[in-house]
Length: 305
Image (cartoon, rainbow, N blue to C red; front, side, top):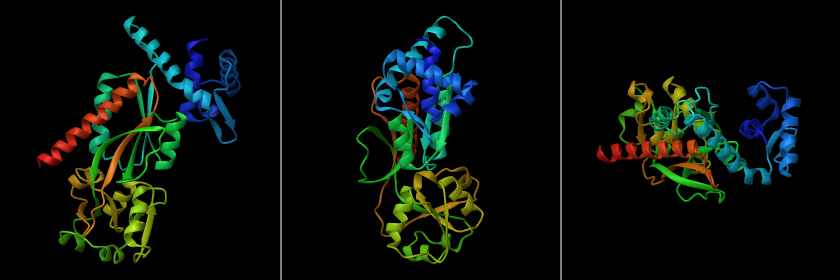
């Protein structure tokens, strides 16, 4: 067994495709496929399930993946201890629903990079169901997802609550609605509404809030960041968790503001999730801890204010 065989299987798992892994590793696809098959023969298990849509970890592969990653981490630590200057960099993949709040995500990644200078962090925007599936299959190491209070969490995932907030209406400061201290469902029905696409928690929340009624005009978009940009350009208003709006660069720059909804006690939770596995790679644990620490700073800032 060679270290590069483990590197290759980790790359295929992370990218979900033999073709994409071959491109990243600068190998031919047949050569990569043969290397993986040699490892499978040596271990006596099929690590991958090969489909037309791509390659994903098999059930046996998912059981072995934490051990594979642990071996690669140990190799990196050995090279570091030996003073090697060009050790192989690890990658941590984070799936996010794009409402993970810039004040949380950017500082946490920056802190992680200070102590892991050669470990790449890949942030991938996706819907909650896709993030859950990728976490379970090993394609993502960590996931940042929104839950409405009371939502069930997949038993295969370990969840840590980072932030707890309330839905707010995001709008331009020069909007006539900004003169009010709070907004009603009627206000949302009377103004163009920028909604999240089906599959996002905030789509489900707004649909429930409006009770099937349709606003005067509506857009549909992927994720909070695009929604906020559309609001800043004057296309309408959108409903987001307050933690994805407060201290946003567009708010600091005066392009956006927000107002609470009247008679609504809903709470939205930002959860940090990972697959239940033992052991957890050191880099993944350190980035996990960086998210938790940064969330604590944000919570303290809100309570202190």
